[in-house]
Length: 270
Image (cartoon, rainbow, N blue to C red; front, side, top):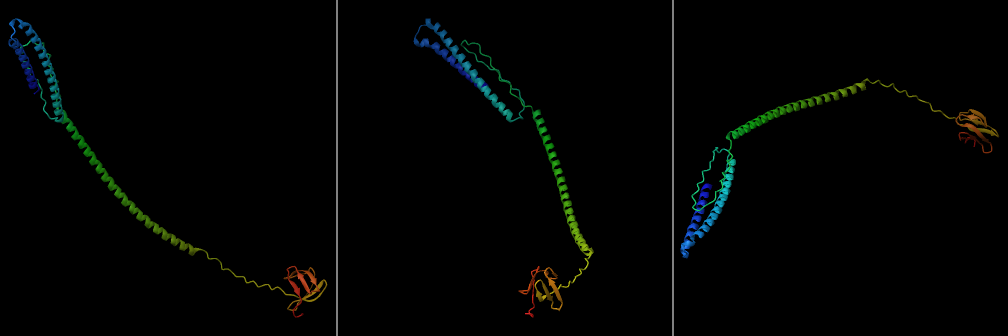
């Protein structure tokens, strides 16, 4: 397609150059000039036509390069998207240059587009096979991991059952220990030695004798008890239950003792 466009542009350029040549030839006839001044004007027309042809050729080459690079990039993109395209060697057909009537300079060499990259189907198939092998390996590893996890779960279940049974046995043993401790406590209470019986000692109350004054003189006194017993005392004498006699007072009829008790006359004597 790029070659056809290039040929069409080249043909249009040739037609333009040929048209300009014919018009140059007809100008003197239309103007009514004589054939003697035709040679210089024809030389100028030839130069002008040559310049126009060179410019058109350059423009055609630039357009060809642009379209060739565009189609090459598009084909490369298509080949990268579809990697299963069969490899074909592209050959550019020779460019046919139509004859040019005017004198033209040597045309620049036409650059052939670089060969398009080809896709190696063997490499693609090798990569696909490698990917399949790696996927199979990954699947086998996943299956092995799943089997290991299943074994671990079964082991965990067995251990949990064993732990539960051990806990039951421990609770049974704890109950037995409690029962045995209660029995031991009962036996220890029974085997304790009994304390000896406490003997109650009955103490007879001590009766403190009561004395009354029977007769008294300065420094001396005679005392009599209710049972009729008599006692002669003076200052400093010790009496049971009364202590030491401190003072004998015949005027008031009393005897003071160290215990604070006072011996007086009996009420019968008053």
